[in-house]
Image 1 (tube, rainbow, N blue to C red):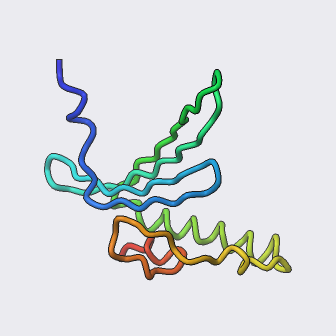
Image 2: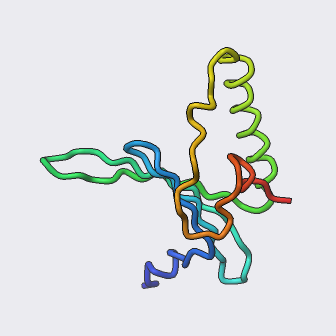
Length: 116
């Protein structure tokens, strides 16, 4: 039987976003043939029997879908900000980025999600 660790690839790059009880992980991983893909993981902390457990949901995103994904995400965010909540001041959520394991911490929201 094949070892399960073959399916868990080492991260080439990782970015963590803390959001209350949720944490989002953006991980770049490599295939055996040195192709790259992105996993987006939502980790949600829950209480069960006086202990914390983490419920995880994962999305695999492949290079051929990067541009479509980023465009759809930006369209959805723009729709909320400009059409549904145009009078809301979203600047209250603008904060300094948390230290991360990458060297690209000076990016503004969304800029680190653009693939050209």
